[in-house]
Image (cartoon, rainbow, N blue to C red; front, side, top):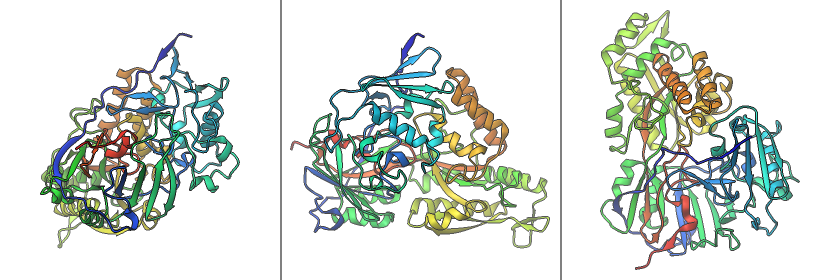
Length: 533
C-alpha cells in the first residue's frame, strides 16, 4: 500500500493578542506563590486542577502537559509537528495504518530509555476495560498497536478515522513504572515520571503543583527553572492575588482582567478559542425535555447582549459547538434573538401563561433549576442572564451553585451551565457531547441528547477521509441542533490571561474549553527566555 504523510491540521490559526498593560508584580512573601518575581521562575494562577497526573487516566490528552510528551505536538498555529516521533506518521493509502518512527536517545526523567514498548503500553492500558479513563472512546478507532523493533510503532485502525494523528499528541507513560502498578490508584497517578520539559516536585491538592526544569530534556533544558501552578478556584481571589504580586500570571474573566489596565508591568493576552458556554436541557425533565421549550429557549436568549455585557466583547455569540468564522461552521444556523417567536412556539405547544406570567401545560409548571460551579463568576453571570431571558418568555429558571460533586448527581434531570469545545477537529467535542450512546456517561452528553440523524452524521464525520463528506456530516449536525436543540449554546469565550512582562516567548494558541495547565501563554513555557532589558 502506498504511504502518505500527515500534514497536520490546517485552518486553525493562533496568535497572541496583546490587549493592554496591567498591574505591577511585586515580590511575594511566600506561600503558594513563593518564587514569583524571579526571572527564572514563574507562578501562575489557574482555576482547576486535574484529578490525576497520569496520562493513562486522561491527563494531558490534548497535549502541553509539561511532564510528558506525545508522539506529536502542536505548534503555535495548531499544526502537528514531531515530538517523541522523529517525523509525522506514514499513513497507508486506505487510511488504516499509521506508522511512527521514534526519536532516538530520549530518556524519561528517571534516566530510563524511552522506546516503542512505552507507546504500546500507554495506548493498550488506556483501552483496557479496567482503566477508568472517561476519554477512552476517543481512541475507539484503534484495532491494534504494535512495536516494530525499539524505534517504530504501528497503529492499525478499525476504520479510516480522519483526525487520528491529532489523537497522538496524547502523552506517553513509562511501562517500567506505570506498568507495575494499579493503573487507577497506583502511585504513578500522583507522582508521574515522563519525558517532558518539566518534572513534578510537589502536589498539594487544592493548593498548588510545583515543577522544576528537566535538565536532561531532549529538547534542551528550559530557561524557566521553576514553575508553580497555584490552584485558585475563585475568580475574585485569583485577581486579588495577582494584584498583590503573589502571582506572575493568571487566567481571569473579562470583567476582572480589565481591572489591570492602568499599569504597564503586565500584559493581557487574549486567546481565541472554541470554548463555549451552554445550558444543558435534560431530556428526562418534563420541561426541558419538551422540544417546544427547547426551541423557544434557543431564540429567547439574547446572545449579543451576553457578549457585550458579560464578556466585555471578548468573545462571540454561540449557536452550536463550532464558532462562527470556523471553516466547519454551517452558515444559516445562526439564531437571532426573537422573543415574540419564542412566545408563539410556547403558545402553540400549549404552554399557557399563568397569573404570575409563568407558563404551565397539563398541570406542569414551566420551571426548572440551573446549576453552575461555585466560584465561577463567568458561569454565574451566564446563568443569571439566561434565567432573566427565559423569564421574559414565561419560563422560570432558578439558579443554583455548588461543587461538581454536588452537581454531577443532579445532571440527569437538572440543567447545568456547562462548557466545552475543541479546535483540533469537530469530532473531538461533538461526538462526546451529542452521541446518544454516551448519554449519561460522566460528563459526556450531559443532556442525554438522542437524535438518530445526529448519531449517523457523527459516525459519518469521524469515519470518512473525504473533507467534503465530513463537512456535509457536520453541517447536518448543526442543522439538526436548530430543529431540536438539546443544549442552548450561549457564547464562545476568548480566554484572557494577565502575565508579567519579563519574558520573551509567551504566545497563545487557539484554545479548547479546558484552560489551565496545558493552555494559556505558558503552553510553550519551555521555550521562554528572561527578557533582555
